[in-house]
Length: 568
Image (cartoon, rainbow, N blue to C red; front, side, top):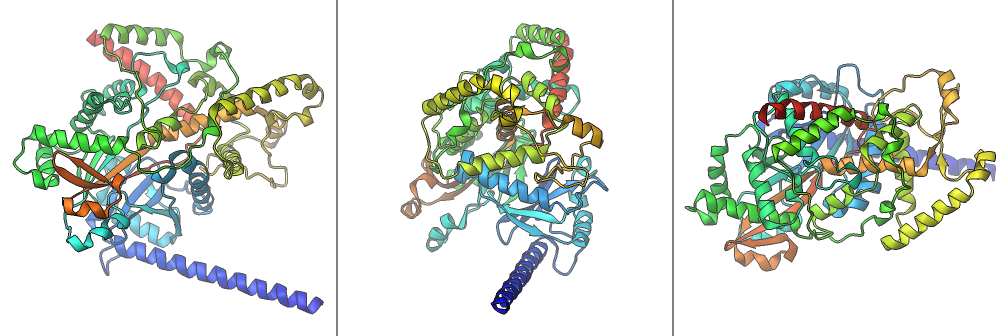
């Protein structure tokens, strides 16, 4: 019997080794294919010019033209890369997307494939693409081994284009990328007559990033009203900043670095069947096409309504002076904005719930108190909660509800209120028996031997600078469920405010229409287009963005007062 058990154990061990080896071989092939699409054949020092897609503060994106995919690399300052090559962070981000984000944004998001590269290849790649990168972005390089490969939304998916092969449709694919920003604000944050995006324009202008303020307002785009959407799209075309890009066959042809005069030629190439029309007519077609794609329901998947239970009431008066923006600055900015006679139209229209704008705005509506209170909660718990603990608890919470049926929001609110009543009635008992309290959460802190059951290493490498005595002194600090939800919801709403919408279009003949699913065909001005819509840039936000946003808000108000004092 012992021999049989040993034999079985040995066979299992061999199978596991074989499986691991096969997985490694598959990964190595995938990585080689990535490099073959990026580098010029036979030259590991030069890349194809078309591969560089762009970059932000944290990630750099390269296109893989053969696969119609994009691969995203994590950037780091010299010597600041994670010791594990970014594995823990990459896997947690992927799990966050699959378990949490998909429940809000549905099929507009496609999870990526994780690939492990080699450090020596990363060094070669960083050097090879250096000349393609903006000077301002070259302070960070590609150093982490783990990368993610995504669907390239600049192209139409094969399931749409394959059905058109018999028609020999060879027209180019154009893609419009819009970063819509914040299209909803909570009642507790209604201090100013201008939205966050429009206020930030003053800060950009004051720092010299832009010469004039954009006329684009996210609330117009999210309104669903034809005229207001037209105004917002015209504003994006006139001043793209980092909120609008246009691609042709995967290559950027219009962005913040383009000459606006080139737009007529670009739209003329796009709308082939409408040649010799005026620029005004081209713009009319463009606006209708983009507006239709933003408002149409392409997918129907259940929304995670359980996340919208209201939080327990907390008054902004509970915030002390240290956690509130200086009131003198707030009052001064308010007065100047009022005198400037400029205000945003915050009236929101009805959006179809499964449209891409409807999904994003709904995610932005997650309850989180005011920004002052969120900042106070952040300061209170930042020494014992980090990105890893915040997102681990979030993933666990959403995983446990994965198989539940959608519930009416009224029923959810009743459940929350009932639970709060029970929590309140047990408060006295809990104060005497704190170990049995059910309305608080305590992160597991590593002991002196370094072991902990909940990973304590921040997956964004934000090290908690504290000694062991401080840690042991703080272990009894607990966070309430509502406080934790406020932090989590604020971070999720921030992700929804920073995401990108990509809409791919290809003009087709009317004879092709019967072969394509109805939602994916847009007809306007006697033209027909295939369309596909996706969402990118939905990474988990670091909890430290709360502090960053506080600094931004102060800087914005200072800029508002400085500029408007000269204008008013």
